Length: 323
Image: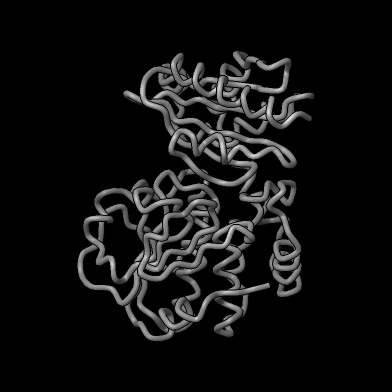
């Protein structure tokens, strides 16, 4: 299996001062990959700044980091800026985009359709996660997958593969997890830290949202709506919506799950599928992206408009790809 390209390795070897950034509203892979790259660079004696526009989610505030995760766009020159797990450059936010020198950007991502926005680009959808890609950089540079680096890589892999249940789970994912175990990672304790982060308010939000779940297309499409008023009423945040869609995907007969989340002037959508059904193609019709079985984007207008448009698009693809 091909590993990191030589220009990525040279960027690490030849520089001394680095920035590591990932997409705002970060998930486990965004934080895991950021932490992993930070630990890797620190192990090599490099100077590292970490950035995320919206910061560390409360559910991941236990993650060990080699430096503070800044929410203020950094100033000054960097030998390289590693942008991780971003399907496009906009995902890091306008503040950092404006501050970065484009010639320093090293784009490491595993999403289909990445527009190659870096001066150096390593895009490989064969990897389960950006964190798994960082693990291969560490191997190439002789840095052992132990300590904070190991925890960060594991976080990336298990959250993006659904604990090895999604179709992006490949031999490399399982082999990397096995290597982490052999090197002493306490996966039981780490799994507890990852999973046991819910609040009672989140349960109330999920109860309301799942209680409104709707089936379309003869039960092949399941859809939920998350309204701004739901978050206000239950005292929850966007972070508490993470994972909700997966419960819709578990309904018997559902081939596509859709989550709609209301925002001012637009609706953010997430799509999930199982097997060969490609939701990335549906997301692309709305300017979104992602992977074959997990994708997303946004639609301008109301939730009602977004629901009509997405149900129609999903119905078309379901007809074209019968079960």
